[in-house]
Every structure is written in C-alpha cells, then in structure tokens.
Image (cartoon, helix red, strand yellow):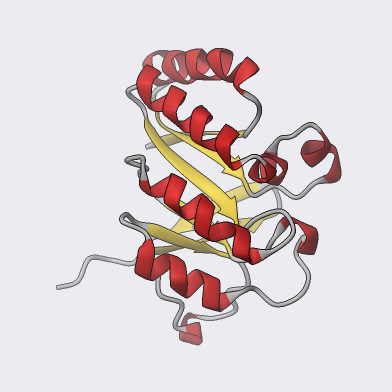
Length: 170
C-alpha cells in the first residue's frame, strides 16, 4: 500500500492536513497517513514541526484527536523520545496509547541528540512493555543479530524509506 508522510504541526493547519489526508486516500490510493514527529532538522523544529512538536504533548494529543475524528485513513506516528530528555517519553506514550495507531515508529533518541550518541534502549524497552500496539524500531540497526524487539525495522537510504517486515511465523 501507499503511505503519505508529513511532519507534525500546530492544530491551525491540522484541518488542511486532515483534508489532504482524506483526499489523498480517496484520489491517489494512499492507505495510511504517517505523522513524522521524529525529524530533528533545525528548520523544521523551529516551526514547531517534526520533533519540535514533541515539546507540546497537549498539542500532540489534540492533533491526534482531531485526525482520528476526521479521517478514515490508517494513521501511524514516527516519534523520538522527546525534545531534551528521554523521560519526556512516558507522557507521550500515554498519549499514543489513547489512539488506534497503525504502528508507532520509535527512534530512541531525543531531538537534541540528532543522530549522535547512544539510543536509549531502556526507554525503548519501556515502550515495548507499555505500548498497546505495534512498534517499529528506527535507529542504529547494524545487523540482524542486534536482537531489537520489534515487529519491523525502518531505515533510510538516500531519499527512500524502506520498511523491513519479517515473514510471518510458520
């Protein structure tokens, strides 16, 4: 299926994005809308989008509430653990658990780390134990022997996104 991705933003433009999501679903065959709350780019974050939206958990909650009220498309979220500290993630995870997300894609770093430093695998483990739905790991995957507990692994290659889903168990 096809996926439409967007960086998060304030509710003011949410009406337009939800409208586009519905239009894309109907006219262009998009089956899923992905809210990207993981982008650490300074330009994106300075506008309160991408990982910058994580600084406003109540806004994230209102945004997801509005989306689920107004679209029939599947919705997934790519997230980081927070803006500054991975302890921010417990509150975000409570919010994500309120909605029937198709999947939660977790990059276990905070925005301030960009792609540097160690991922917080303890907080990722917390997510795997406390999230009600499907989780996809996004981050430092080097080989299949890493043993990362998830239903799929997401990685970027140049400008394309690839999603590796393991085959069903026999």
